[in-house]
Image (cartoon, rainbow, N blue to C red; front, side, top):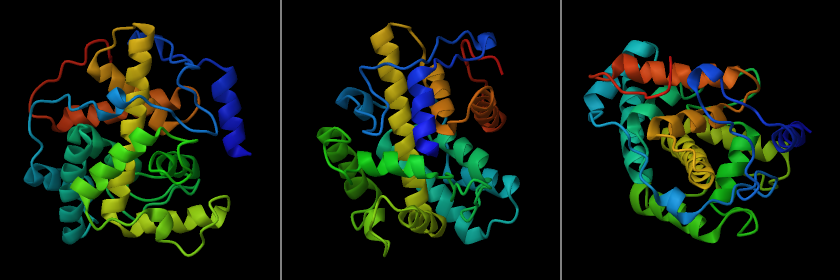
Length: 270
């Protein structure tokens, strides 16, 4: 029921970004449908590089950020999180500074984090987010995600992230993807496995980046790369009203706090 309500809201309302940011209406582009069938994305948008910062995020810098942000994270986990953020960002051509900041916002780098709404892990996955990533990775076949996109994402996983990767739906005992137990078991996997949590978060962020970028091109709105990230982050948050706007702003602010030079955010006013 929760998912159906969200889908009806998306299909029959036109959320608008805060006017102070001068963003265009996100709306719903029916040529790139959001439905129970998932996002059907173009190859160009999914394979595009979305690295928009110039300064390198080193493992030493990232570990320092994690330690300062959450002193309760064990040293071994700090290292594992830093290594996977950098590795997975590179594999999926997304910006490590923004993936790092997203994880900070979602879980404060606590791999066992669980929200009151049962979102779980470093990248705080809900059932809706799990369904989307699983679809893009091919759990329900080409009726729910473009086959070439599924192939690309899996190639990046097996060829770059981990050649011994096992799909998350094959790591759980309960295999009925219509059952809440299936998703609760996958969430436990995400809480236990740093690599899996970061990989799923990166894929979902890439899906939203590709969606926002495709809308930008189709609507000829001329948004810059930072604005594409801003839109994608609001989609990642998924909350109604101003909550998603503040969420995206907070992620930008955390990047700005730790980035070595000033970033030009164009129209984005933080």
